[in-house]
Image 1: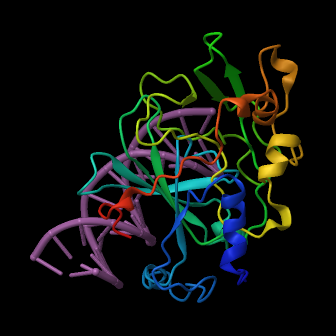
Image 2: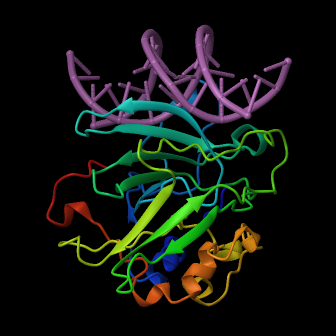
Length: 266
DNA sequence: CCCATTTGACCAGA
DNA sequence: TCTGGTCAAATGGG
C-alpha cells in the first residue's frame, strides 16, 4: 500500500527548497496505515489517523496531479469556502490522496492553504503541468507574473476523460488565467514565493520536483514544453532557468501562521 | 451520452 | 451541539 516512508525523507524536499513550508499536522503521527476502506460509509471515520500536511500556495490546483472536486463548504472562521478534492484515480487505482483548498486572503494573487491527505498511491500523475508564461512588466522586474495556461494539457491519462480535463479553476472573475506574482515588497511579514510544486512528501523515487532539478534542468518528461506557441511562451522550468530565481526565493513561502499561536486548528 | 461539478444532506468528531 | 468532511443525486458542459 502506501509506503511507510520515514518522515525525515519527506521533508527533504521542502528543506531543499529553502525552508520547510509544510507544516505537518499528523494528528496521530501515523503514516500510511489503515487503509480506510471497509464500507463506503466507513471511510469517513478515523479522521485523526490520516496523515496530512499543509502547504500554502498561489496555485493550489497545479501540483502535478489530477484532482476531482467532490465537495465545497463554507467554513465558520473563514470568509472563503473550502474546496474538497480527491485523486481522480481514486477508484481506478485505490488512490486515497485528497486535498482541501482554502483561500486565505484577498491579495492580488490570493493565497491558498492546501491540506493534503494521504499520499498518492496511484503512481500515475504524468504531471500535467500547464504552460507557464513569464512576463516581466518592467525592467526592474520587481514583480513578475507567471501565467498558467492549460493549452499544454496532458497526455498521460487518456483513460476516460480525454474530452474534458480542462483545469477546473474557480478563478476569480477577473482572472483570465492564473497568475503568480513574485513580489519582495508587498509582503511585509513574509515575502512568499509562489511555485507550482506543492507536492506531498512523497518518496524521491520519482519526485518530479527537486530543488536541484528545478533550478538546473527539468527532470520531467517535459510536460508542457510546447514552445511552439510563440516566442514568449516558456514552460515553467524554462522560465525558472532563465534567471527567475535571481529574484525569487523559492520555497520561501514559509508561512507558519501560528508562529505565535493561533489560527491553524489542525 | 458521458463525466465532472454543484449542492444539500448526512454523519463523525470535538 | 456545532463544525467540518463526505456522500450522492441533480445539473450542466463537452
